[in-house]
Structures are given as structure tokens and as C-alpha cells.
Length: 319
Image (cartoon, rainbow, N blue to C red; front, side, top):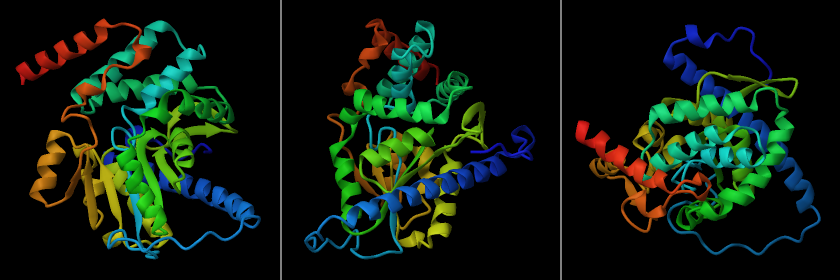
């Protein structure tokens, strides 16, 4: 995305940055989806018409073109955080050193063991990722992202959540990922899963080269809600007929926008909120806690699991 000369994030309020991030993400998502839809239509001209699908259940409603579905990515569609898996792939390709990999691994271990997003860890990961990609071509990172998906992400897709997304697709509805992960990474995942497109954090680029800055702020919390609102307006959607899915209480603003909110693999706060507001719940984990998922192999240090668990226990005792 081209640099915005008038953009001065440090002087703008948090709300204004959220709106900017949301609108930028929605714009990027629509452009990518439209381009891919055009390619898909060209291919379908050479394919025989498929059989009519079986009658859909009451929800999602088949043929409702005013409805769509919005899925959070990390720990909702995929186990763990996309940005950490992406970091592992970049380390393998010598984009950065072992010390930085250890930081990525520690943050991922915390996320997997605690089952919650830590703002400081997420901010550190974003800053690290921006510094790593600065000066690189967008096209280069997109090509690498395709490889990283096959290496680290494909096997971590939750089958249950994937089935929910497919139900919306089968009903003729568009399905979007909505994530704080880079929009390029999110777009690759959405395409591989056969989804419509993705809204993600937009990193600034000039002439196809990353500048190391963001457009607005990360697509997180309220910014996700702004992105969904902007996309719904552009797509002429009725949010009361739309669905949204997430594991995190940070996404309550997004979930509250739609008429059909779902808590998927919910953290404690979201589970409590969902029950209080009679939202639907789904849990596809093997156990109630993400601790049973395990520590990523790329950590390369078995002690990370014990260290993360000890740190979490100490953190809880101090509360």
C-alpha cells in the first residue's frame, strides 16, 4: 500500500487509528478478493456446472446474500499465532538470528500454554516482524509465505472451525478472516482454505517495498470491529444477519456487531461473556486448556515449556 503523506499515527487518538487500520484493511481485503474472484470466474468458464447442493440447515441460511461470516485466525481457525509461525519460517531462511528466534519461541510458548494473548508479547512480535521485513519486496514475502503455510500452518487448522466456515460457503455466503496477522499472510491462509479473503494488519509499502511502518495500528480489538463495519458497508451486508467467530475476549467488539456471534475455543473472559449473553460456544481443543497442544518444535529448547509455565504461575500468584 502506498505511503499516506498525511498519516501521523502518534498524533492521532487510539480510536482514530483503529478506524484507519480497519478501513485500510477492508480496502486491501476487497481489492485482493475482487482480483481473485475475477480469476476464479475465468477458470469456471471451462468447468461443467456442479450439482445443486443439498438443502442447508436453518443457519446459515442458503442464498442470503446480505449475510457473511467473519473468522478470527489465531486459536480460532488455527492453533497458535500466525505471526509466530511466520517468524519460524523466516528464521529458517536466515532472515534473522537465533536470539530473535528464541524470543519468538518464548512468545509462542506463552500463547500456547496460557491460552491468551499478552499485549506486550504481541507488540514485541509486531515490532520484530516490521524490522525484519523492512526493505524487502512485498512479492518476495508473499512467495515465502506460501511456503511457510505448507511447512508450519496447514496441519494446525482446526477441522471443526474449518467445517463451520465451509457451511457458510456452501450456503453461498462470503467468508472472511479477520486477524492482527499481516494482511499478506492472512490472504494466503484464506486462499488456501478456499475462503473469500482476509482483513489483516496493513504494513506500509512504497513501490512494492516495506517501509517498516504500519498503516494506522495493528488490526486488534476495536480495530477489527471497524474493519468488519467498513467491509460490511462496502459489500452492502446486513450485520444482523452475519456471523462472527473468535476465541478471545479482545474480539468482543467484533462479535457484538453481528447477529450470530460464536465463541470458539474461548478464553475464560470470553466464555463468561458468551454465557451471560447467550452466545453459542464451540470448543475443538482436546482439553479445556491450550497447554495440551504442546510447545512448537522450532523452539529448539525443551526448557521453554517449563519456563513459560513457571512464569505463568508466578504471574497468576502476583495478581
